[in-house]
Image (cartoon, rainbow, N blue to C red; front, side):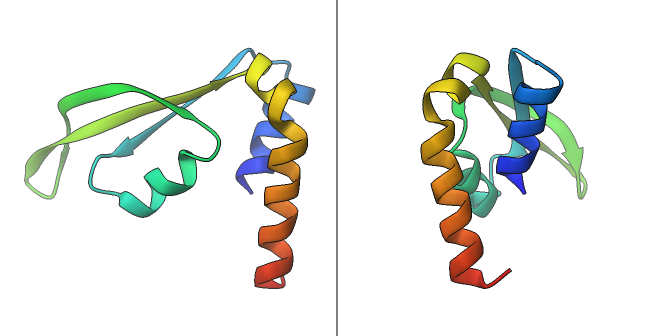
Length: 86
């Protein structure tokens, strides 16, 4: 799904950059995003959730990174689909 979103963003919409925000305690999402995005920084106590302010991590990838890595990312995506039989 993430590969498809990036493919659409860069190849169809012709965007130069895609950015995600993720709560710093969402380890599963961070692990996934780290395969496609680079960490840019942390916004400390940025969003209010469940009665407390939480840190948010900003991650992004650029079109030039997409162009240089999309074949590798496609293989990763297809292997994940095959492994999970989706």
